Image 1 (cartoon, rainbow, N blue to C red):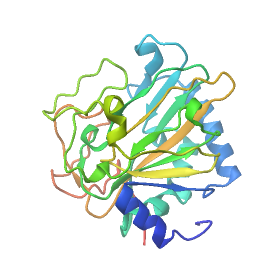
Image 2 (image 1 turned 180 degrees about the vertical axis):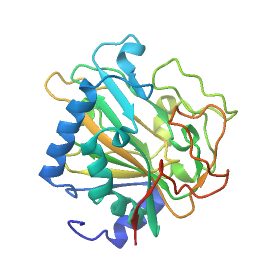
Image 3 (image 1 turned 90 degrees about the vertical axis):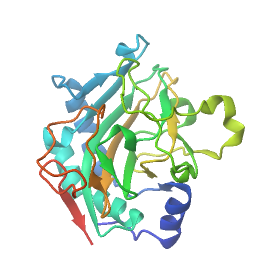
Image 4 (image 1 turned 120 degrees about the horizontal axis):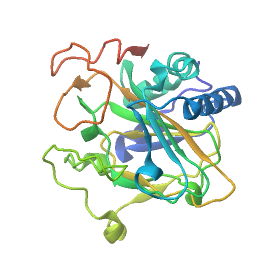
Length: 269
């Protein structure tokens, strides 16, 4: 159940900018449940979908990255199926349904200077469509010095898929695409926005919006984010070389709808 209706202004902002910030849509019980889930997932035996990014890049701190945890953790599964996340994403995208594409932990512990590179999401994934988005839910206060994400407003309308940038510094993506521009060298050319968040706040960004996150340079605060990726009516399966590592794909044709056990419909209008 939504705590309040999604407004027309919020839908318009997302469509225009590719990013919208939604305050206080998740209650303290949900935040506490996901904090517990974070500890469970970080303590669990790693799988092929788990990465310790700081360690892989020989950097200080801990940047914990894991995906598809809803398939193996009961609390993450409860969030995906019982929270309003799917409805929020579906309504923001203007879709009549929302498929969970996957969930993801992006946790930067205190004293973790590792930055998330400038990138956009969709080329990492076997999906095409305008109705594909990310809901980024804060479980801690998030500030610029603890790793608040920066987004380039309007970049989802550049009309260009860009080559995926490796988070770990080791994985090589093979699809032939132009590289992400050197955003740091031309920051003044772009409309960059950064939202500081409280626990229970979230952002929703389009899968082609260019963004990055600084490291968590604070010594006293974690930056725990539970991220869910959602697909709407026009999203279709697009297998290609060099996608982000995922579980085995379901038996659906290229260009077909995602509806499957791996990417189930969670919400319908």
